[in-house]
Amino acid sequence: MGKNRIYIFDVDGTLTPHRARVEPEFETFFRQFVADQNVYLISGSDIAKIKEQLPEDILNTCRGVFGCSGAEFWQQGKLQYQKDHVFPDEMLESFQAYIDSSPYHERYGNHIEMRIGMVNISVVGRDATTAQRKHYSEWDMIAQERKQFVEQFNNIDHPYEASAGGQISIDIVPKGYNKSMAMNEILKRESDGALMFFGDRMADGGNDKPLADALKNAGSPHGSFPVKTYLDTWEELKNVI
Ligand code: M1P
Image 1: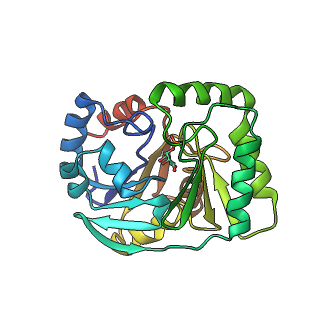
Image 2: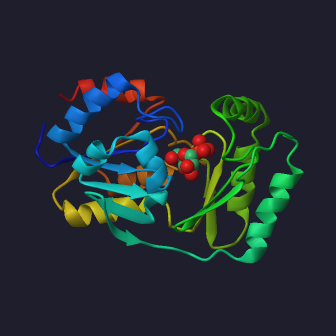
């Protein structure tokens, strides 16, 4: 492999099961991969949640970790920058109204989470257990509640955008505060880099799409690899080493 190949990984659904810790066998493989290659991570989650999913030695061996869809950047455990934003009260009230009016009636708490540069909203709530998450996610696959919210929200003429990254929630960011921000930040540091991005949400409305699109527009040698689970990621990476 060329020395300038730079790997960028989404976390949930790409390196780990959703909001869960990395599987032990993949962890062993990935620890070595990160040691041998140039790796960046990018998640819609904040650094506290990323640390619940991946061990700190792996995070610290990465060349950098972007949290909050790129609004914060960490290197070797040190914060490099944060790009925060104050969301209008009326918008937050409209999110509460949306949650209250959902036909999905189970609610488990923590429905509107403020993060650096973004808001994460969830009808079932971030305090849902794994089983409760799965239940909502299966319902949502049929009801398409999140997809419809994202489409409607993105059709409104305002300086905000929505995407669905994980299983149960929607991320809202100021327009452009999405994962595509990472491309320029990485190229500033790796000017001869060929960026290879792995993500599980590259379809319309997914939070990996803006970065996949930015890399496509930037053209060769950059590229994206859509995966469905960490097992797909593992298979792809086995071909690299
Ligand atoms: O990193 C992907 C997503 O992970 C979580 O999603 P969910 O709770 O819906 O599975 C959230 O942290 C979300 O913000 C993030 O995009």
